[in-house]
Amino acid sequence: MSGVVVLGGAGGIGSAVVRALREQGRRVAVVDTAAPSDPADSPMWITGDATDPAVVGAAFDRLAGEGPVTGLVHCLLSEHRAALAEQSPDAVRKVLDVGAVSAVEPLQQLLARADGRPCAAVLVSSVHAAFAWAGQAPYAMAKAALEALGRAAAVELGPRRLRCNVVRPGFVAVPRNAHRWQNAERRDALIDAQPLGRLAQPDEIAAMITFLLSEQAGFVSGATITVDGAQTVVLPEPKNS
Ligand SMILES: NC(=O)c1ccc[n+]([C@@H]2O[C@H](COP(=O)([O-])OP(=O)(O)OC[C@H]3O[C@@H](n4cnc5c(N)ncnc54)[C@H](O)[C@@H]3O)[C@@H](O)[C@H]2O)c1
Image (tube, rainbow, N blue to C red):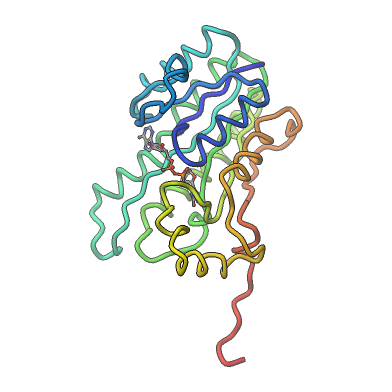
């Protein structure tokens, strides 16, 4: 089976993607600033900054040493929570760099390494790409840019057999945000906003990502697929109706 590079593979959603891909028999290389928690992962793990093309190149090299590489997942988290009135341009640039610009080079590397074979990339966005939330302007900007890149890649690189899609999750219960879903009051408030009456699990996002990487999704490209349990299609009730 061909290989997939997962940027952010140590994270809550990223590690679920790595697990799911391995269950399908795919070879996986991870790039993350965090080191692997299991030493057995070390041979296919590059600990470093995914905004550095040399770091990402090393992950492609390791996978390519063992067979074809035809997949990429961009699953990096970068945010700088602060009121818009207090955001600094440098902080915004950093979020854009990690959250969106960092996907450009890996897409080029995927194209080169696939060497004419059909290949697929999935960029992990967020519902913040389309909705505003106080204090999260840089994150929303980065996600909107990432989605635009996904469409551009699908159109421009499609003729070279690269499919590119975006997955747009709503809130997902991961270790990073456990302080929200492990606190009973905050958990109830999060669940209240969910038509399905529960929170999304990382495996449920990973399932969509691995589907989009698979041959079953062979004609899906340029799509942005929301995986939010219908949270963002709820019509707000008018006050005093
Ligand atoms: N969890 C959610 O509620 C949620 C909702 C919508 C979208 N998302 C998106 O899903 C993706 C994964 O989020 P998560 O919740 O699993 O977060 P997470 O923090 O658990 O995972 C992100 C991973 O990216 C790594 N990372 C960050 N910057 C990096 C860099 N420069 N180089 C290498 N690695 C870097 C981190 O070390 C971490 O392992 C992100 O793109 C996030 O925006 C998450």
